Amino acid sequence: MPDYRRDLLRDQYDMTWALFEYHLERLRPDDFLWEPAELCWTLRQGPGGVWTPDWADSEPDPVPVPTIAWLTWHIGWWWTVTLDHTLGRTPQERAEIRWPGEERTVDWLRGLGLDWIEALSEMDLDSPASFPWQGANGKTNAHTAAWVNSELMKNAAEVGQLRMLRAALKS
Image 1 (cartoon, rainbow, N blue to C red):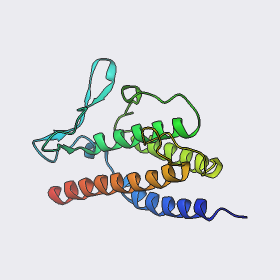
Image 2: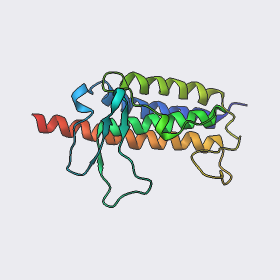
Image 3: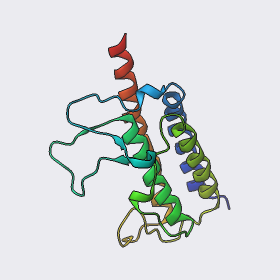
């Protein structure tokens, strides 16, 4: 018997990815580090060329406006850790997830998207999930897949809004 949940999750993912791809293909290197507000979270290049994201363990008030660089690092972070959990690998720590820079970020995200499609096609949707929920609370891999779709849609909208705002301000 076919698993309609997987088909539904994949269809939802494909629609979300198409919306994200619309913005990814239009991003230019100078879009990533553009700071749209005075209170902003971004990435900063340190010694050896390593990019470090602004971060706080508890959400500040007011919440800083993220740059596209920060948002794309954030997507790479949560998606890498989700894949680690889903595929049974040791999850990487936040500080281990490296943003690859303006020139390689789009390819990095596309690669994570392909990795997710493969994981989604093979995962047992009924298996208990350990991420993103602490202690799982009865959550399954199907819940995680639905969360990935939601988180990606939210972050894609944020990237798109910043990209369009920057383009509008430049014209």
